[in-house]
Image (cartoon, rainbow, N blue to C red):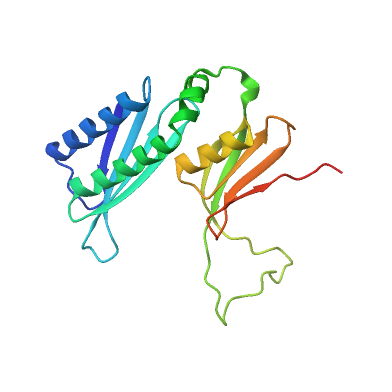
Amino acid sequence: MHITVAGKQVETGEALKTHVRDGLTVISRKYFDHAVEANVTFSRDAKGHAFLCDINLKAGRNLFLRGEGEGADAHRAFTVAAEHVAKRLRRYRRRMNDHARSLASEREPEVAEPARQVVLRHEEEDEETPDPVLADGAENHPAVVAETPSEIHRLTVGEAVMRMDLAHVPVLMFRNRATNGLNVVYRRGDGHIGWIDPKSP
């Protein structure tokens, strides 16, 4: 497994890197036949008191996991983040045993479709904010901050919920394996899972 350890204004010495490699190796051996790569990033909280750790683990071609942790030092922050990853995996272990091998070995080109993910910069509104339509009639669009390639996978609703939870993201678009339509699952404000299944007219 290829492991990248980086720090944002945090020193990542050899002892910390060894701690990260050992911890992720244990998780990988326990839950997967193999894991492809992991990116671990350390930073400080806004006040500069606590250490933060963000783990992004690619455990196969179509399976991604994320864990976040906070601690008094970088080692503790990683341990908490790794525990979050392991907790999510334990929660779905039975389903992972059924799907992990098939997800890692999917080769059919129709399983995923190319898509584009765009992040737009948020602009604060105030009394001096100009009209959204400029004088020449052109629309005042927010600036694009990041544009990255993405994939839309063909999944069941249960598989989509599992991937959303494992990747620790609030929303996931997918192509419903049963209907072939584009669907969305998302985490509601009350903690429950919402499912959007638009019907064709």
